[in-house]
Amino acid sequence: MDALKPFWHRKAILVLWCSLLFSAASIADIALVVRERQPMAEQLAKTIAQGLKIPSQLLTLGDKQVDWSSFDAIVLLGEPVLDAWQTPTDSPVVAVFVSRESAQRRSALLKSAIYVEPPLSRQITLSKILLGFDVRLGVLVSDAFAASAADEVAKVQREEFVNIYPLSDLNNLNRTLIELLADNQALVGVYDSELYSPGNIKNILITAYRQNRPLIGPSSAYIKAGSLASTYSDLDDVSKRLIEILSAGLNNKQWAKQDYNPYFQVRYNEQVGRSLNLSLPDVNDAVKALMKAEENRHELP
Image (cartoon, rainbow, N blue to C red; front, side, top):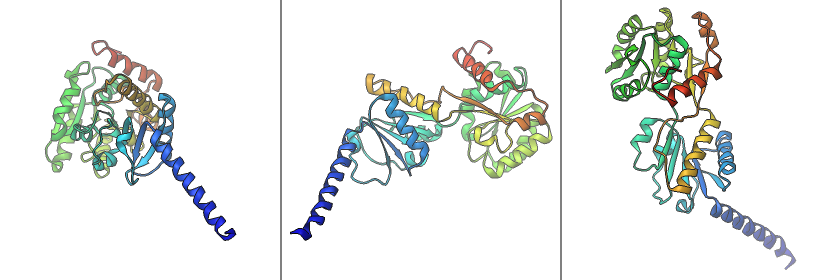
């Protein structure tokens, strides 16, 4: 009998651990789903739990024997998770860190979503704040994004100074880009991973700066490559908006439509600004001016 004591002791510990694990899963109201665990996702889960004052649990797509319908809400983090999600559930599903294109493609699945990219209208307004409201701006887009770009341009002040250049064939990129740069004083990029691919962005930047034309956007990821400026939403901004969406949805059954994040920051490439002899305003002042412009589209910031 003494020889069996270690076995029964280990078994008791295992049973206790499993019961605790099951209990933790059963009381978690919010599930945040990732492809793999990362510190950023763990911080988001912690912030959501604190902000809503209800438990949250970080899970991966590979986790087995999860009763997804037991959660009050499920948050999918990133496009790979959104694209791979095939689990039927009655729980409301929200997506974050996903593009507008991906979220709209799976809109039937989602109660709400926060787009990862900044809206083009915000990038255009930033360009006007930095360069002047009468500066002519060119927007280079692929045909697939032309209609949505036109909708965004219609939201900004003095839209007559903004020109859209649709591109149906990437083989015509150089010709269209040269035409845009000849007729405009800056290029505003859109969130299009094919058009603004690593292979194309180098050519776009070199061609633009040869003519002393800055690139604004398409996102803060391009700042290091040589973009002059961009708006972006950091983890705190995403957390703040996600807490608002979940709170309204869970408490009042009012789920916000999928949209761009209203909370954001501004980032500059100071070296590019100096090379173009530009005096850039304080980033906090730029954020305030952008927020004012978005609050009232009919007033100049």
